[in-house]
Length: 323
Picture 1 (tube, rainbow, N blue to C red):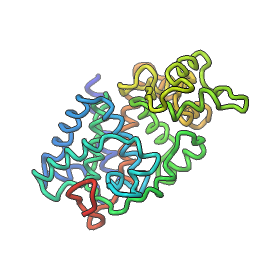
Picture 2: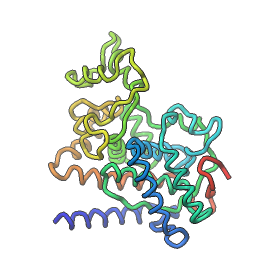
Picture 3: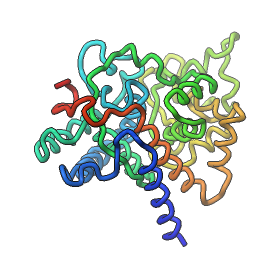
């Protein structure tokens, strides 16, 4: 029975991958021009994640920040003054060295063939798999963008956004409310700096109290992890108690009023998102599989936002520099 479920899972993901895009992406784009492309990226990601587990959530966050600005074109990777890298929401992104490593290997094997945008899309998938997600198929054929402006990152979804604002930002990119909840579920792995949650713990209300949406029995734990005068760069898990494993416990924490980011906890307060959260935690034994399937589908959709293909864009020789 388990094998049949997994076969169905892969068939459904294959259908999603082959039908999701009309922009020129396809499965096996490099089958003839660089057949080792996916295996090189996979091995590179595994090497870096095995050395430092924080690389996995870093790569997931990186593709999210790339795709929501100028589309999925690797513009987040470009160095220089006033590029996307320098925008406040992107200052703490990590994992660039993984993309650079894979790109160097692929340039040596298949010069001027594999785009940085495809490497990032593949690396994000492989990072999720390293953390425990089921593998999903990634259509490739993206080309790299030439424009990278810090000002364009101003409209990235933020940690204080209301559900209405989050839904508007996702809808503007062709993503549904279900995609929103599912992709935010990527916070099942990774950490956040205390500076981004401390306001919820001490100065949220006009009287100087904590955010009332935080479970009062959990509040002392958060305050001990992020003292009022402590190190703002100290990091804590976004999925308390399970921040290195891809699972559905993130949604259970949200249900228990233990979401770390304000925007995450709001998923439980809005009826449209609460219903989706309940679906992920409501079926015992199948919740993890459901999240894995939906996560793969939503990642495929997101990684197809405003892609450049054909003669649009370029294939950069070095991901951090425009040719």
